[in-house]
Image (tube, rainbow, N blue to C red):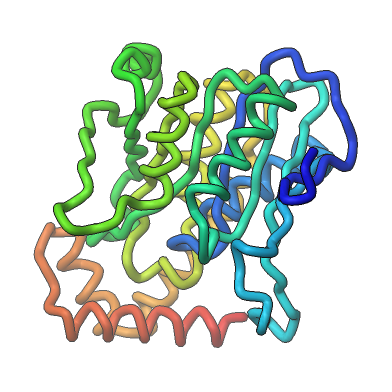
Length: 277
């Protein structure tokens, strides 16, 4: 390992061909963090490697969340007995090509990864009472056939708009393709007024797919309780505020709210949930 190699291996494991699940901190609804945290907890995954933040993140200041300093971290975990590698990281602020190649170096040289799944979210302008979907983008067309037996949309063909930089997930899929590693970008639409608080239904949708595809045998019933509690709080918000109920009822009827009404609904939902907390 050269002095410039940003990869730090803390502990070696016996990998015999694993899957890799990637979640980014700070994405929409913090979905990637929620999914990878859940997997780490349920599978008792153990940290074994990290990528040095120097050169990829600005270290002149740190983010503060809930009065806790948050330094940028990029860590790998291994779930023994499941042949599952989990990578959880802040998105790199600089040198994305080098950073993503470092991720793939660990995947190839240390974990023998045979498939990659990266978790993402997108804004939905549907009501929270609508069923959640799971969308997928693949880097090899044959993966569409592989995913055909699962409950997700697999006929998406995403293309970066001219003049725009590719998203981090698109960049990752392209680099994985160059290394001949099948990779899938999973996208869960989140109702726009739940982006700030998180969406347990979207979390469950992603985890249900990963549970089945990767044969993890995780009991997900605790998410049912979280979903019930979130839906009860939203029902309370509707009963306490006729305006919130009107906005959500119109969304349930597939009507489009104005930008001002969207912003008002986001604000009112956040205020109500914050009071509850």
